[in-house]
Image (cartoon, rainbow, N blue to C red; front, side, top):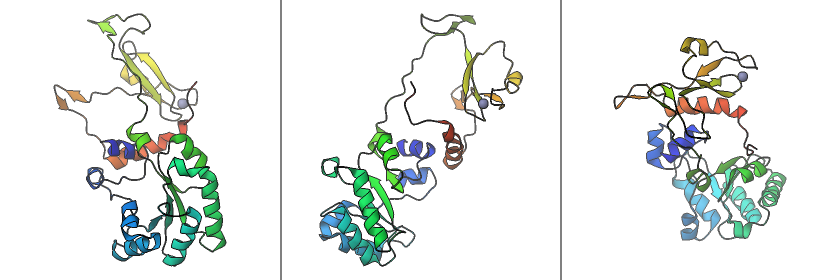
Length: 252
Ligand SMILES: [Zn+2]
């Protein structure tokens, strides 16, 4: 379920085979460190990978296992003779120093030798701050922990009205409500559920000129799911379309 949510939230793909089946896509991933450790050399590992793995899987070499990333990047790029799609740096923070500078150096050395097409992948405990810092240089990111253990969204479930009469504790706005969202700019506002007929909600204009739409719709009625949910791919497209309105920076 985490991978499904990550995919719907905008990630390009997932690694677990079962999760990929659930969202009706092909799983994606790169060679593991285990392969390099067993074969004893990065170049031998990418050559073995290239020899046996389905051609539709992109050739991405992990270059942080035994030696310096710059020299390993050059070695695998030269050995693969134009068939290398990307190099991946999964360097642990304890060995990293300045991750951006390491990528900058690897990019320079690859470009200088004619490997401008070889992309750079980053992974290893990355959070949204690091992704933003590395974005000018890095083509793709592998993010695990920061998604699977994302900060919680704080919420509480409170009584808002009793038998149709507004009633809530101190600090809470009483009465049942609807959430209205402008589909053009993403602005949300809260309106009392009563006194705003559904047909009028669609006519309410946002300052940007877009129309507000009521978001609350029944999902489960008498224990049965009553709404037909779109496929994960369609949900993802819907989310990605709206992400332009969302800032990664904390809201003050
Ligand atoms: Zn708007």
